Length: 319
Image 1 (cartoon, rainbow, N blue to C red):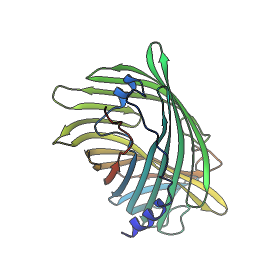
Image 2 (tube, rainbow, N blue to C red):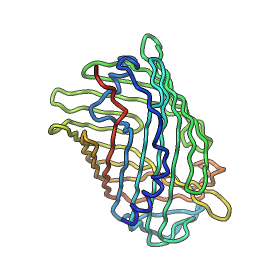
Image 3 (cartoon, one colour):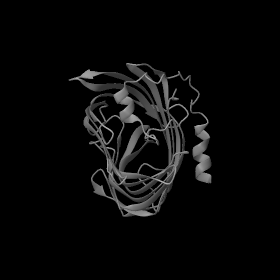
């Protein structure tokens, strides 16, 4: 409960109140609506999650020198997201994405750049997204421009940008496929250009193959009246800023979560399985991710995640 109190207090400051413009049924091209339509949306309008892992050991290096073996005795994270559309038109839409993440780590020995064994970090990001729908080679094309800022509970830190271009290759009752490219405008980014590939295929037995690269690979099936069961792997990350000796450092770790997901249409979800962290680094904010001063290698751990979400704006009313 102490962790939840620490994390939920800043949530009251998030600007969730925004003007929402009504969407007509035909305001987005039919193929685009069909591609993204789903009974349980992948992007939630409002979402809060809590994650807990079991203890895990790790080895680390500081400026290339090995540090003693250490152990994370307790890892907890609270995450809140809001994805809100401002304007929806036939050819374009404007939306915002608000994110807040509170991370708490309790280690056996003090971690690098931390003040003690118990470390608490607040991270937030705010983004404006502009989507434009057009035609390319007689296919529906989607162009997106994103501008975002992020920071901690002390300062705003970075301004980032991202441009994407994607094409809907196929939309049938059984199969949906999209390809594209994303360009990241951020000197600290590990990979400035990323391919986008989305593929969904419905099998006759009710199972669905759901691929969204580089984010996830899942097989899922609707169960009971309003539930969905998924098996597979999702990729996530933890990022936050640290301050020491008048310098700002950024910590980033890549997380691969493999296991079981259960989602309910009323807005509840539960995830559990094994978490692997193939890469974790800390670096001076003025440098790039590859110019790190601290690197850690973690043993796999078990995790569970519970969440509550609400979609008051995402699905237009059928007339």
